[in-house]
Length: 171
Length: 128
Image 1 (cartoon, helix red, strand yellow):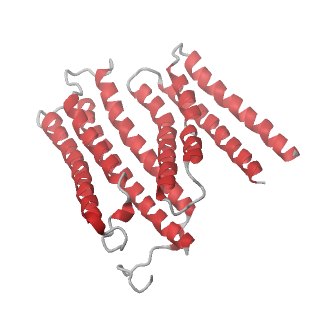
Image 2: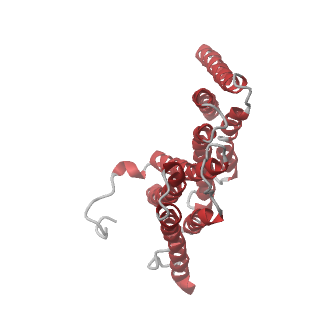
Image 3: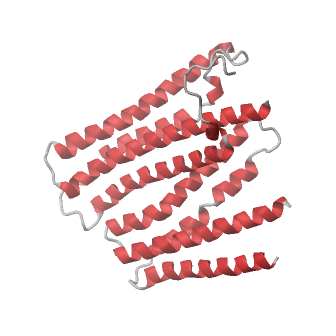
């Protein structure tokens, strides 16, 4: 196991414990919730009495968030052990290839969501030069999409930890 | 057993303070939206319990069981942050005042801490 490592630095030992994995999954949910409520806050503020301007959050602002959430769903619903083509039992029927294709689509959806949120912020709020209470809609959109991306990364790392953990348990 | 009795009394005291803060935060301003925090924190541990029951504990090599558990943990983390984010959102959009936000957040955290401590004690007793 230690001879065919890929990287120079060894994964620290505490990362393999079940507690670290649970904490990772919990914080992934917390990050997703934080991002989601950043965006819901912008949408609710846009319809509240405090919004003095004429600009509102439309469906256009929702599209990047929907793309990011779909991408997160796709990425995390793939069984991670299907990705390694050189594991002998899974390599038949091109499962690894299909899994990589679906994973690529998930990452594309997610990156598209983040890029789309920046696009919406620039085109809808920065170019017409709105002031800050209105600009918050765009900033919250970018924040929400980056939080969803971060949450997905944390969940990915936590699930990879779990594989290592069960491997140690099996030996 | 006496230590357990003492903890139960202390926990109920904390729970009562939490409910007092949340109910006060809504009743003082005649605006009952902060009560949503209580609902959030009451349903927060439910996904963990349900998915813990749904998972198969027998074969640890089966990865689908732990995926269900992970989904429950994800939902629980979501609800815990929702209990803090919801009053902040309501205060930011002007539906409740900021004092009500602070009181409902503190009260909700007390209620959730009580629920978590209770389940920890009960699980420890089940193990024996």
